[in-house]
Every structure is written in structure tokens, then in C-alpha cells.
Length: 314
Image (cartoon, rainbow, N blue to C red; front, side, top):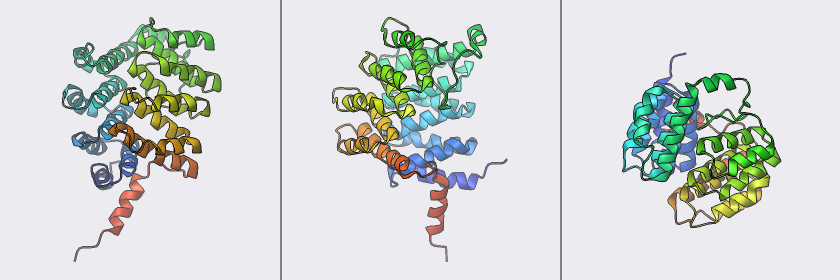
């Protein structure tokens, strides 16, 4: 089916409009992600000139989830732009790994020892994911690793099945290679039960900020209340990396229990912009979850409503 570029451009106009409320721009972004195609990629790409690191980070995330090689050049530009915030550059590197094309290995290898640890670790993981995709190991593991119930494109495949105790040991052992710890993380996530949530929440105490941020992300996917105390504790640490605190805020919004939302409102004046904005978006997500509304990605409806409200030309 050919793209309806007119509709996509109307949604894109919401995304790039800094006068629009941030939650509305997020909904437009996720609508574009779901629609896909060159016009949607172009609309998302225009957002990398925005002044919101959170929005740019989420744009990079969506491009990775779309797995469209048409996004590679813009993601490389973001990764290589030292004027972009580290949280944005990191997400561009992760998105390149999600797309998984061997052609960008040389670019990723340029940054695997970046002075910013989170960018270096991200690129190392992306390299290892792409190499795994091309390896005999992948063929050997086909059919043995667990399915992802959340359908996300992850920075590493889940590890082979193991006991909860074995996965916990791999997850929390700082001497295990980061890629293997990520694999344990996603194997635990795919179990999608309370014991796995409780093990994963322990990962919020590990050394790597990148690792802690990914733990918070998967806890948000699982939407289980057992990890609320650990997420709140981490969000409350002002000395914690904003990358981690922002992901904790979004996870709490996904869990969407009323106590979570009340706590998030207390961070709307946080000193870190990325945390403030994450709380705004998380509250919108939480209110959506609590409302029982079916559609979060309603950018098309909003775009058409906005068009309908414009006065006709004389």
C-alpha cells in the first residue's frame, strides 16, 4: 500500500512543533514509528534539531525499532555529532545495533572506546549484536532461546534457558562480559513473572549506568508492581545518572499504579530536564493505562482533528 504522505506530514508537523505539549509529540512519534516508510523516517529525522534531549533520544529509539536501513545515515550523523547530548548519541548507537546491518560495523568500532562510557558500552553491545546475528552461534541457538512477549528489538538476544538462580548469577556478576549480562537480563524479562522482576530489580545496584538504565527499561516493559520500591528509590537519588533516573520515571509511568503517578508528580520540578520531561510523558502514559483507552499512538487522530479545526481559506 502506498504511503499517504499527506497524513504522515500532518503527524510529523505535530512531532516537530515545540509549541505542542510533549506528550502529544510523543504520541505523534510512536504513530509515525507504527506507520513506517520513507516519509515517516524523514519526519522523525527532522526532530534531531530539537532542544529536548528526551525527545531526540526517543526518536533514535523509534528508528531502531523500525529496523529500516533508510535511517542509518541519520543515526550515524547523530552518533558522530559531539554536540548532541550523550543520551541521544548512545540511543543512536543502540538503534544502529537494532537495525543490525553489517555495513555499519566500522562506524560503531570508531566509538567502542569513546571517552563517554555509556556511548562506548552501547557501541560494544551493538557490535556484538550484529556479529551474533551473522554467527554460527545464532543458528545453533535458533529455537532454543525464549520468545520476547513484548516484541521489542533488544540490544542483545536472550541467553539460553537456565534456572532463575543461574540467570541471576550472570546478571549480577560484574566480571561477566556486559553482552552476556544483557542476555541474562532479557532471558529474565521474557520469563515475565514476579521472581524474575525481583531479580532484575537488584540490577539497579550494579556499577554500569548503561546497565542500570536497561534494567529500568525492562522493568517498565514488565509492568509489575513488585519493583516499584526499587524504581522509586533510584529515581530519588539525585546523584544517579539522569539516563537511569529518566528510565525509572518512564517505567513507573508504564506500571501506572496510582501511588507511582503521585510520586512522579513530585519530580515535575526536578533539576534535570530529561527527568522532568520523562515525568511529564510518564504521567501521560500512566493516565492512558489507567483510563483503559485502547490507542496510545493516536497521532493520526490528533493530526486530523487539528486539521479540521483550522479555519478554511477565504
